[in-house]
Structure formats: structure tokens, C-alpha cells
Amino acid sequence: MNGLDSTTGQTLETVMRFAAARQAILAHDIANSSTPGFRAVDVPVDAFQRSLSEAVDAAREGRTDGLQPEHTEGVRFEGDRVVLEPRPRGENILFHDRTDADADRILADLAENTLAFRAAAELYRHRTALILSAIRERP
Amino acid sequence: MYGLFDISTSGLVAQRVRLETIASNLANQETLLDAQGRFSPWRRRSVEFAVGDQSHGGGLGVHVAAIQESDTFDLRFQPGHPYADTEGYVRYPDVDPVIEQIDALDAVRAYEANIAAVEASKSMFSSALGLLA
Image 1: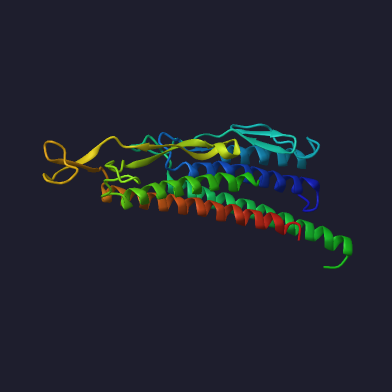
Image 2: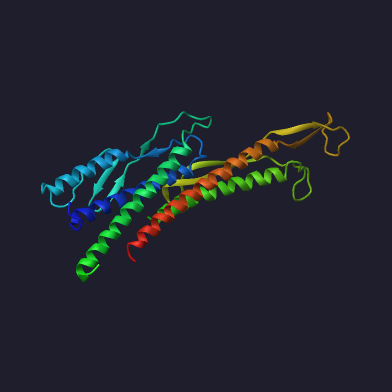
């Protein structure tokens, strides 16, 4: 993949949009850690990554015009927007107040999600800097 | 993306209300009279959380749905006490300091978790702002 083609930018943008939307869901889980009967929710990240990686391959091979990821489990791509449909995580036992939020996992996911966003933002910034230096014809 | 802060803030507000309730329970664990000086033992208060942030009209976040007042009292046998009933029992607030302390710890930890979420969102914002610079 050429670092300056539009697919790179679109991919990084999609990752940032996804991470921003998922951050809201994880913040929601944390805010409700004391709500009786609350079941923690999330979206399948691996399904999103698979769909994105297939879309990148298709764009690179010229099968699609630009990046066109397909809707996947819990994730819909509507134009420029990434719409998430969270579902119960269901990864923990029920506590006495009928909640199942696993604080450690949610906070770890939050940290990971933040890093994913920052990594994408940093790559995007480098890409922009690269384009700028190409325009100026000096590093 | 600004909505991120609203979600975590709703968690902070809810936990703060919970902590205020706990503090008033602890402060009033021996209170027998109301503000007008009439006999009315303090009723233990507890918050009820519900999903969704009403102040911002979103389905995400949390809010305090109600503050329940307990109907039970701690009966202590104190004949001769000015507020003792005919059998010599005085109704004291049903506040267990141990339970309140543990509740307070839980509230503080939950508050910190929301702060951690705000910090994470802030760092995302700053890297997004870095794209402009």
C-alpha cells in the first residue's frame, strides 16, 4: 500500500471513528458499574477488524472504488459514519445486584481502545507530514 | 465525540450523589429530631441508579432514579429516655457505619473509574487535536 494513497487515510479515519464510538460504549459500562441489573455491553472488535482488512485488500486490488467496508456483527458503516450496535459482553458471572460488569476487563479495553485511537491519529499525522514535505520538496 | 465526556460525567455525578447520601447517613446515625425539633428519627437513605442520562437525553450514561428512605429503625431499650415508647424502646436511625463505609469505598472506586475514562477520552482528544497542529 502506498502511504500517500487515499485508502490509507480512509482506513485510519475509519479506525478513529470506530474507536471514538466504542469509547462511548466503554464509558457507558463504567458509568453504570453500580446500576443494579446492568449488563455490560461492547461491540466485537475482531469482526470490525476483519471487515476493515477485507475492505483494504479489495481497495488495494482495485476491486472497489476506495475503502468500502461491509457491515458486520454490531458495526454498520453509513457513509462516513460508523454506527455501533452494542450487545451484552456476557463474560462474567452475575453478582448479587444482577450486574456482570467486569471492571478490570472494561478498563483494560478502555486503555486499549484509547491506544488504538492514538496510534491511528499519530499515523495520520505522520502521513499528513509526509504529504507536506512532498509538497515542499524538503524534509 | 464530545458526548464521551457527558457519559463519564453522568457517572461522576451519580457517584457523588451516592457519596453525599452515605455522608448524610453517617452524620445522622444518632439523629432523633428533625429540623423543627420534633421527634423524627433519621431515615437511612440509599440511591437507586438507572441506565441513561436524562439531563442530556441520551440512552448512554447513568442517572439517579430515586433516593429511597428506609422504613426500619434500630430499636434500643432505653426506658426513661424522653422519646421512649410505652415499652421503653427508642427508635434510632437504622444506619450501620460498617455498611456505609464499604458503600463509600465502592462509590469512591467507581468515581475513580469514571475519572480514568475521562482521562482516556482526554488523551484521545489531544491526539485528535494534534492532527490540526
